[in-house]
Length: 239
Image (cartoon, rainbow, N blue to C red; front, side, top):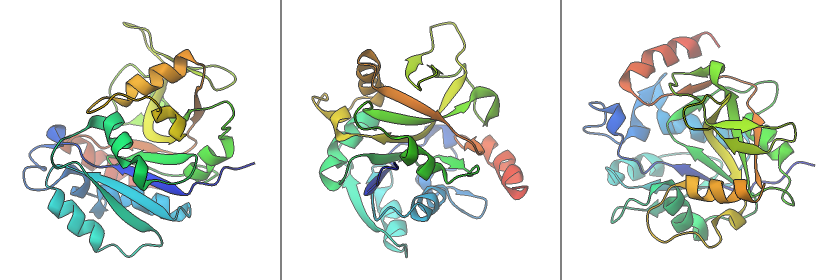
């Protein structure tokens, strides 16, 4: 039985340092890739999945991002989680935005990834695998060999039941986190105050055997640097 997703959060408050010089005068989510702003690729997928409410957090050059969002004509409402005064990192950003989010589970999407669907809509694919009794978070993962524009040694191992464990230091892991996940508000219970990484919450969920993953069946692109834009656009033109 597929979970109903009432709201989504797009993480868009980062400083975009790796995308310089393109982010000297614009926030990273507004860097254009394949004819549209990075964040619009994520919003298109959220809209296609039929999610009715979206929260976007803002910090660097927030006015420009807010103006872009205000001009959107979408089939969902948009609310802003304002981090102008303090950048809260991924975990702290979710905690601050939680009062603006509804439902269980909640979709969380990084704004610097682009993906294409496989046989099934990728967000719906996540929703179909959600099991709130067993899971505090369900991460969309892609095999390292298929992660376009991504460098690294992988993030997670996944067992036959979908439970996740971390890559060991100095070793390689087969799965990369795509920046797309479903979470229960339970994941944020007792979270630290102020800025902190989602990794703290994931580690706690791993210890409780409540962090799960599912394999992405389409393409995925890590668009983190200026050099990654042209290869991404070339690949997308062939889809």
